[in-house]
Amino acid sequence: MNKESFTMSTPSTIISAAASQPPPSSQTPANGIQTPRVFKDPFESLDAARNRRDKLKKELDDFDNRLRQREDKLAKRKYFIAGREVLAEAAQDISYGASLMALLDRRLRHDRDRMLFKLPPLQSCSENAAEKIGVPNIAFRSGDDR
Image 1 (cartoon, rainbow, N blue to C red):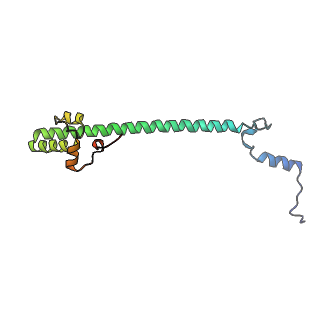
Image 2 (image 1 turned 45 degrees about the horizontal axis):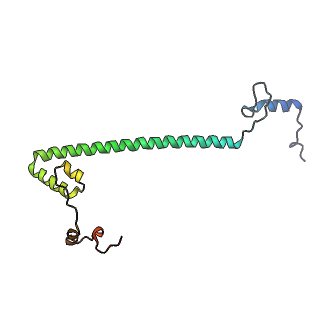
Image 3 (image 1 turned 90 degrees about the horizontal axis):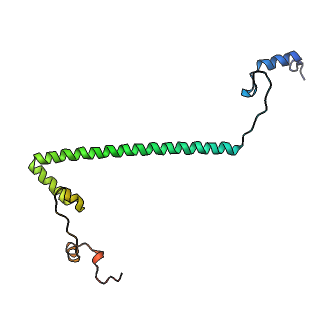
C-alpha cells in the first residue's frame, strides 16, 4: 500500500467533515437529534391515490359534460339563426319560398314536423302501394304465420 493513499483520520477531521455535510433531509431537526422514520401503511397511500384519481376523473367528466352542453347550445343557436334567416328570405322571395317548401315536402318524414310548415301528412304505405313502387313491405306479407 502506498503511504500517500493512506491517511489517518483524527477526531477533529471527522467532526469537521460531518459539520460540512448538509443534514440528511428533514429528518434531522434543529437540535441535531435524528428521529426515526415512521413508515406509513402502503395501502393507505394507495387508497389516497385512488381517491385523488377518482376525484380528478369526476372533475374531468364534469368539465367534459359542461363543454358538450356548451357545444350543443351553440349548435342549436346556429341552427336557429340559420333557420330564421332562411324563413325570412323565403317570405321575401316567392320563388325561393316555393323551392324551400318543395325541399321540406321531400325531406320531412314525421307528421309533427310537416304540420309546422302546413304540409299534408304523409300517406301510410299499404301493401299495394309498396308493391307499386317496388319496396318490399314485410309488415303486409301475405301468408305470415306470426
